[in-house]
Image 1 (tube, one colour):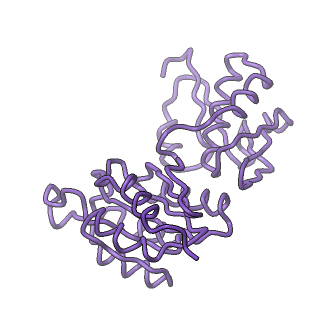
Image 2: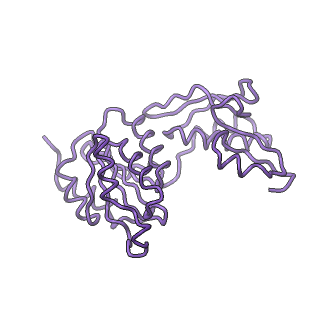
Image 3: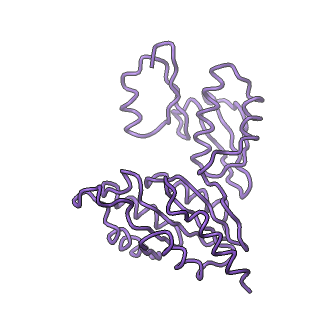
Length: 258
């Protein structure tokens, strides 16, 4: 980053601090700590909207609201607002842009609502993202039983380097269903994610977890168990064997539960 630039960085995390040690340009921090130049406060996570306030250098600066869920979206939006402010974009324009923002595909995207069951697509493919996604869904659907259906597909997810953290994050859901590792033969056995261990760790935390061979097996297994107002979050960074179409199709074929 050149000296004429500007970095807006999260206010915590050893890796962030390490990256900023040799910054040549001005650095501003955003977050919830007292050292944040852009401090996030009074976050309210509702079922249909999220609101929060931002203090700039300790003084009230702006109040924002948007339709997205999840604290991580508040963090991202605050960072974007800080960058916009440095380009002298007014708080009114920033607030309007956020309020009318409809998110991006594959981030808490509602794919279908079938007979009271909501199916959501999310790109989360590492434990931190999974944890934040589940927290966001809990706030948005507080009365629902939350299913997480995971396809270990990314290079990181298929390895055991984050295995224990993955189990902890998945255990935040009520029901966990995991597909067989995508192209597992491409990962050396010693480095490969151990699904049995992940399932065991989830069960130790009092939650249900199962592994199935593919999307078809998952759909066949969970459709008879789903009931309103369940929420099914499908987590993958790929096509996941067409599960996004197969699951709502089977639910529609099953009809309305009475």
